[in-house]
Length: 260
Length: 362
Image (cartoon, rainbow over all chains, first blue to last red; front, side, top):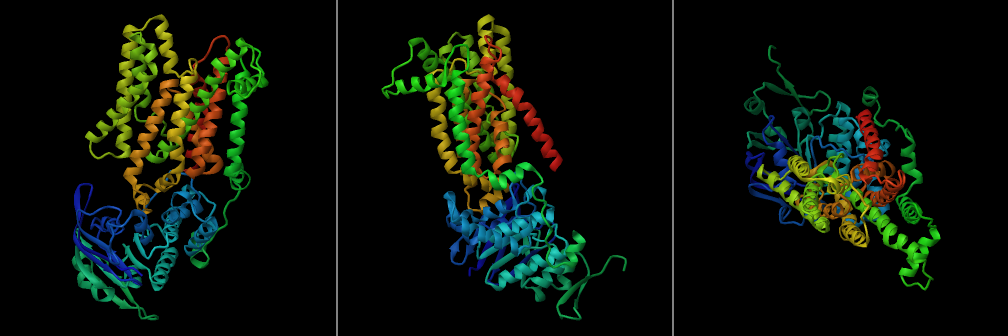
């Protein structure tokens, strides 16, 4: 159980300041959605939260530890990152790809092969890609590859999971499966932070949201209290109402289309 | 598949297994250890047989006898003439070919991983053109004995020029580094041509041409020591950290997220392979296609995992160059082809085949 806490993070991408003084806190056992328009700084923020890129300023803490003071391998055993649209030229099999997630645990010499194949198998099963184990990743569709990369992150077995648009490229069924998986991981104690484009999914699955616009936090807090029609109007310039699902009582986002 | 996915909760589809013969070979029969043992045995046999080939009647038994007697194993030596052919001429040449082939294949595999460019080769960063310029300069100055030193110095100067240029253009990214290498290569190549055009005559022209196209004709024991020494000193650590290269498959961010110190690893390994290539090019000239093609061929058999790929590529490169050089010196006997011509004739079609295969898949 490890909480994530980022304070006053400022980070640049391509020489431009894209995250400007952002605070994020995410509690163990919860899913936090980072939402905001294109170019709001979501991807850069996630890379910083994963401690892949050092921010210009500010701190990132995993539990009590400064993420950038940890040894790299130790950090990779605490936090895993699923990038958006990561591709490869290499002819790796799906199983090989997922096994990369074991690197922080095994080091250069390789570890217990049986343990590895067990974890790889479980990770593939969790994302519904077991039957693809022997396929080359270069032959997969975008959605299939996205799920394999999620399995790679699962194989890292980290208490923190950071995902950049994990539902990108996925068909609607796979989107629901993936977010259902994130909910189950959260229920088991994982701290999850995911950038999401789809506000409907954020409302349905996230415990908390961080709303970014132009690199700054516009609003943050529990999803239902934070994602109000007024906020969506201010951030995205769209009119929306929140309805109640007649069967489950969950909130459902309904957008007013221009011309209605 | 998409429609069935919506209705079926189990979103799995059957995998097309065994679509290619190579795939099934890889999966089941050809384990890495087996392939390694096979290639190592093939290398030993190749070296012994290659020494016997040529315009003097030498047998495999003679090769073992010569080696044993020189190692002081109490075997009666061969006649001075035959022993000279084996020990002074052919054996060092064949061993140099093996070491150079191993080193080039190893460097190629590492360069391809570090630049994430499947078409990268060991001479990528201006190394061979720099080495050529250095070599041509000393040959034309009549200082041919300094050739290995000058070639190595030229390779390193070109590497530094490449890195300086890439750095001057901004942050040192792989793409920019490769482009800077192209610029430095072109310039060094142009200067080399200019120097040859203005000054070379007769013998020096032949010597230069042989060197530019790659040749092992002059390889004696010092060449063995340089090439084999470089392969062992640089190659063994490379093989030991091979697993880090796997992590680069999905790019720098992905590698960093797996705990790999991306920048440190990249520049250390790039520097190490540049040193290795510089040492090789100084004894053999620039021999193309070995570093490009052999790692690809091995990937087809064992997959791209670098812990298998690096040692197997090295062994395969060694076997390949031993035979390429044997062909170079025996096919048109008594004339000798530059070995680079042989590797290009064999390598270019293979390379074309790999390109077509990549295209058809993507």
